[in-house]
Image (cartoon, rainbow, N blue to C red; front, side, top):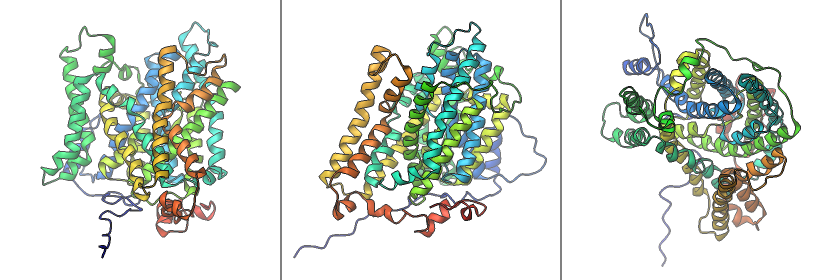
Length: 549
């Protein structure tokens, strides 16, 4: 007689277990001398403390999110502003503006969007069409600052128009109808490549200054994965604040190398990557400055550039869908109802609109690195991310202090990316627990979409390296971007392909279970599960006036 099958030792879970603080449970406020000392130690200026203050883990965790999001916020303007004609002063102002806008958009998303602990920051997806605007040949002004402002106003116009695609798709509910057909199977390639697909920003960035990046990567793994097992008292502090500890140690080490003359006479590229005094931000940043809309002048509009940026915004929408799904998983929330995802997309469109109004030279999307930080700390609290947004606003106004943190060498951020992007990719793979991996249909969809999601963008990127233009290179740069940008995005190609195959290949009741759709059906409607309303309902009883259906 056949032996009865044993139950699975690790059954699928709607919510990720072992998360210390989920989306609605902020770390407890408690008086801690260690918290106080750490906060003073890793702040850029001295606090005058009149009496004993009560500090929280939440404050330090929020500060950690702020440090992590600085990487993209600094790297993108540092690459674009010099091409636009701006100097260190313009670069510092653009970084301040990007930081201010990120804080504002993060608060809007966490209060009125998906309500997930998602940081809304800059995106590499928008870099290519922005460079096309820079290289359009319309800028003949001999004054570099005047040229910078003209290009900035052109990017502002493109972003303002491009924001409408996400605003319309999100708030109209059209993206909700698309998301209804998303299954765990089709989510795997989308989410996995939203993390793994950013591999070019990981170890290659570490190798730009191997003597700084590699020690940081090793220390980060030791602090976050090993050291806590050897520390009996305060072990949660060691792994939960691994980013603060390791960044401080390696940053100090890089400073010692810099002042010790280790990089004197080295090539410019090496000095730019390794030295702690080459960013040019501290001296150029104003002491106090509040960014404001249209600070560079009235936006200018070009139809072709606007269409190209709208396609880029759609690509960012698909990528951010994967980012939102990863964040919901690491926040230990239930899967998002399609209506909630659509609402978040609408507010992300507002974020792009605000980016265009303020002039950040970049669009906005879900920060993948901060999604990975949720996994590292095992803290998915919404409150923590809202605190990080306050840090963004605070340090964007106090320019000198914010510039100190923004001067962290980029290999240090690249080492962080090696862990955080990997965590997001693993979140995508974790949805395989809801699927039947013995199904050849599932094997084909997974393998084919992930492989082409890597292979097609690789072809497009190699073509650019060899020929200095994309495979589509007509006389219209805007048309080239409309085709080249989507096919250069790994999560976009993999996600769209998996979604199409999963919804067009033969389906029946058994296949519905094989693709894991029945696991997400119970969260399809907003009020179908009490946990869903707990996690995603709007504050201030706004659901009465803006129902999430």
